[in-house]
Figure 1 (cartoon, helix red, strand yellow):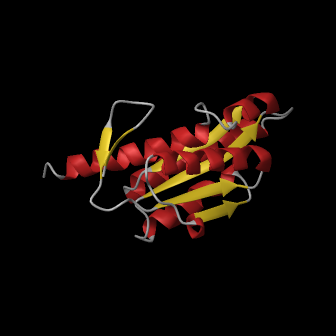
Figure 2: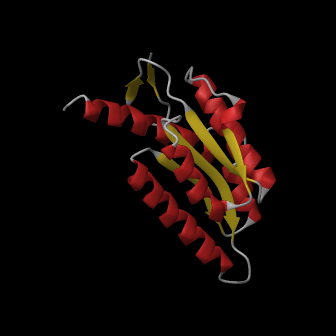
Length: 162
């Protein structure tokens, strides 16, 4: 199957559709459900299947790196998409959670050599988060799953060089 993504000019083809795990934070659930719906819609638009058993709910963004890393290590998934939302409050909590999740996901992806994409909104207001999780082309869940699929296609192309 060869597809062209809406967000870029990259084409991807797979002998078998990739199996993706989607990790969804329960914190800021209205927003994260919007991100999840956006990811599912992108997969559907590109003819890629997703089984609801491949969705994993976690308490918040801080828990995502460990869960994503463990999912990648199972060998059952080609990629992992992480969807969450951290909204700035009155304390430094926002900065610590955002940084921990970011560094953790980067490390997990590099350690496992599996694409683990960052679909965690880090916004200053709830309104900004709502805009980024609406059912439209700007939904960041769409972008996160698209980045995962494109990364898988590029890795497959690179692996064919050897």
